[in-house]
Length: 494
Image (tube, rainbow, N blue to C red; front, side):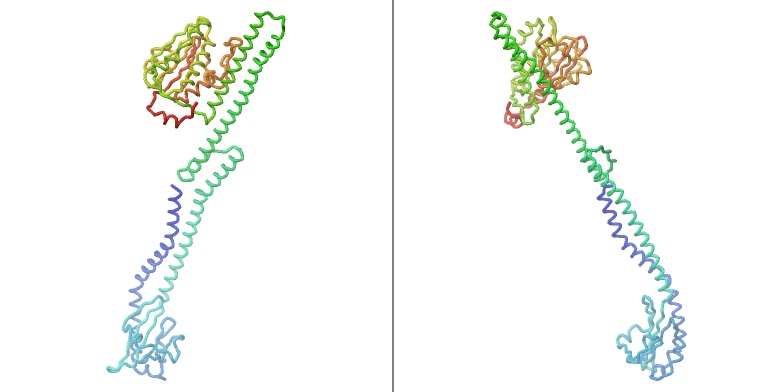
């Protein structure tokens, strides 16, 4: 039950309880009154008949008369009062009404003759006394309803006791439920928050179908998100530390070589051929360092939340035909057979500079891991054409319904299954022994490729088959028709 509903129901019960008890008491007393009314009425009529014969004597309504007969009729439950015709009280058997100056106004005196009037604890009866046609006095008889009062008092006490017991039980029940539904869950939640704030382990809060349950779920979601964010920050921090250490080490080696060859150039005994060879080594090492720093800068930019990419709609056939061309010379130098396929139609939103970087990264990676006389497949095709343009083990990874694929596949030993999940991590080298001496990459190429493709709204996958080779599959979606202004609103220029 929702806490709001439960509180309203509890409040309603507590508010209606006194009204219910009062109504129950009234109904019980009224029922008792109905039961006693007839019997009490007949009993009073019998007593009245016994008394009327004595009180009808005219002399009783004169001053200084003997009222001993009247006093005999009265007792602790019956009181008799005699009035003159004008309202002066001449005698009363009630101690509280024996004042000689007592007077009752005529209007009140003459009201209610011959009626048995029942009040809470009394029954009264008044009747005039005549001599001929002349009114000489009025007598009033009062019966105390002690049995009725005792019955009502007993029931009142009983209802009061029942009300008190029920109220205390209700109070105890409400207090127990409030402690169970509010206090304990709130204390548990506050304890969880306090433990989480102190970095101590916390246990999951039991699920509840109310507002506190929703609050606990929100806290648990926030806690999980914060833990995940902290773990991510910790991992990124470790990654940055590892990257700095790795790059520092990778820069130190070519820098040492550059320094050594530069110092060797001062030797005038070196032949012209040796000097040219040393200069080429220095230039090669400098280019390697430049490429490493360029990759590091690109990776840092892609990691920044402030960096976004300006995408421009292009014709797919024209752009991707240009993208996959120009690698024949590099492959010929390595005696590698390059097989290029381009069948792309439609319009795509791209950043041409960054997609060229993607193609370069993938091709350089494929060339570095392909032996002489090996084969590299460079394919840019529509999704529908892809299964007909790639190897069988690559087809299993093609699950898109529209868009295009950019696939780079090379022959080789392949990558082990346990390494595939890490190849897109920065500075990860799947198999350093497979790279030739002096041709080891920066380890950032595939990570940069993945981030560039994802900023284009695409995905990157890698599949490998032992003894056959490895393929990197980049998928890009069709352009959805957004204007350049809309594209610019969601991207920051490269």
